[in-house]
Amino acid sequence: MGLKTMAVVSLPGDGRVNEDFQGSVGAAAWVLDGATGVGEDALDAPSDAYWFVRTFGRRLESALTIAPKKPYAQLIRDSTLLVKREFDEAVPGPAPDYPPSAAFILVRVISAADDGIELELAALGDCAAYVRTVAGAIEGFDGAGSTPIDTVSLDALKRAHRDFPDASTEVVSDLLRPVLQSNRQRMNTPDGYWILSFDERAADHLVTEVKLVDPTAPIILASDGFTRAIDMLGLETPEAFYARVINDGPDAVARDVRAIENSDTSCRRYPRLKCRDDATCVVLSVDGAGAGRS
Image (cartoon, rainbow, N blue to C red; front, side, top):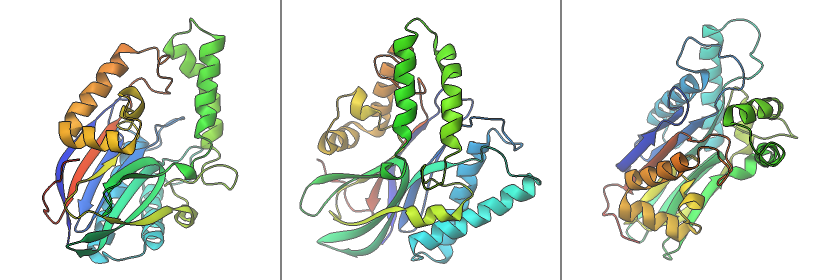
């Protein structure tokens, strides 16, 4: 059995390009969320993060086409090494201070029956999946546990808002840059966080789970720019978020999130590092099964 894309939305945020990327092949699908650079870009590309998510996505597609059942850790390790090789060929010399990186969510159907689908999930960072289990529960899954220092940046933002209540977003961004750079230097270290980049050891820190899901219910994958809907639209339970996306469609949800972001350009009502983040949502069905309503 395979996965079929029912709907997709992927909107650029404040940056010059969309650094999210989504793809699928056979029984697998994924969303990659590139980390916006905190230093100078090294590549002749729209941005290093833009290049990274598209190159990594291409490697995932190739690997899963050749070996669709390859264990996730090996899949991520092999893809990482190949992407690093491509980068090194394009940018010879010392490694950059801030190499490109990305959060991701990856799902794969590993077995199927009329009464349930075994879905294997893997993630690093704050991309997420939402599914309906065979018991009827709506459940979320993400890799946020692999990035515990994310709160450091948000706490710094809140302090900047408190200490400089009249500062523009540009001034606040300048104040936060040293914090963001310090956090980025802790990428893929034991006292930092684990994320896709050029270090294959991140494959040993995947957040994984196998869920038995309803074969007739859609599967939702999303980057954190899209799951802002949870706070901004009051969709504070997995059931509420799932229902809104399925019943209204991801385009409608994305438009509503953008409207709130545009009404809060100071980022003080909803503290966030970017006014408008890249926002991606993919709605999938299993082997063309009918989409159940929540």
